[in-house]
View 1: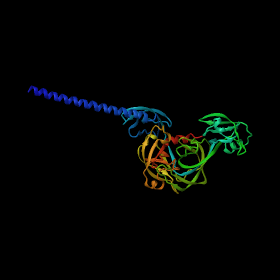
View 2 (view 1 turned 90 degrees about the vertical axis):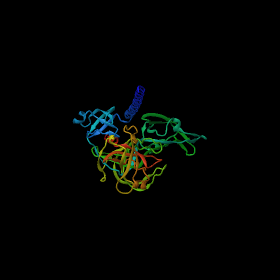
View 3 (view 1 turned 90 degrees about the horizontal axis):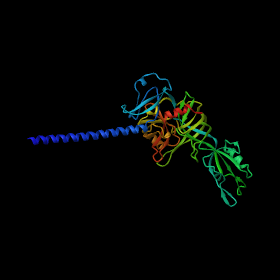
View 4 (view 1 turned 60 degrees about the vertical axis):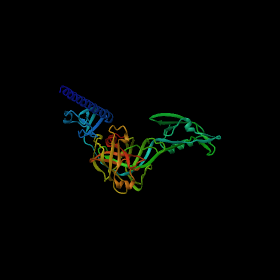
Length: 413
């Protein structure tokens, strides 16, 4: 009997030890998961946040802005900034962020296609060319150190603003050197170009191709009536040859009409083909990484007033884009937001989305050139603007946060 009691006691002890080991393991796993989410939150959640209307909000329903109660209950002044905690599921502290509180912001959301006429601040070198001289090939511009993408601002101390001026100066030469001042990566440099005599053309050549303007189409995202500005594209306008951002001197946004749609296919970018109209929508003032901005001449009669959502309100799930893909007014099309990068470090790729609307897929094959800037609507608010298509899968694309474009529309030149 005594042995049976000891045996039962030992079995109970073993069960308890096993239970404790399981509990310890589960606790360790739980702590590891919490630690992983906290570490991820420190990376994912931005250090600066803007809230409109005094609301806090959450990041993907996991990371929540959680004030101390007092901060949320007091009246705040527009533009005031405070420090607030971000917590995992509203409980576990993750990081402290700077929260700028602002009044609710509303803009007139458009979705209309428009034409872009842009003139550069300086003249872009889009190519260099070898010249046949004395039986050999010589590239004067390249040998001097000039590169494709350089922006020529002056030649022999004379400012140049157009390719015609550059051509006129370079053609008026009897073999003398040129002092060419360029802007490269935000710094100015001066190079000495020694032109060579082209026997075939009977004149001296510097061996450069230049451009001073570009044209294209895009979509207007919104009109900021308070600032008298408009925002479009969601990304910068780049030179087609150099892929460098076009340094904007001046430009016009004009009304455009869609004439044809080239459908997108896997590996092939589709496009909207438009005809420019004489009606000027506005003057272009700034070409930035997060969009093209200007002063509007009028607000489209089709534009509707929407509240701008702060980025922490953007969530994965159903949404809509407002685009013009055929003659007529902008239309809403269904999409699904599949990923959100709250830090905004990716610039034009803060949001990943997928087109789910069968009508849009039938018309365009997905996202095509010309749709950049199409407003992204979720829960009745403007949350972003379409920027890029994923070429190998045109049903998918990227968008930039609306609050990024709103801030840029307040600070244009």
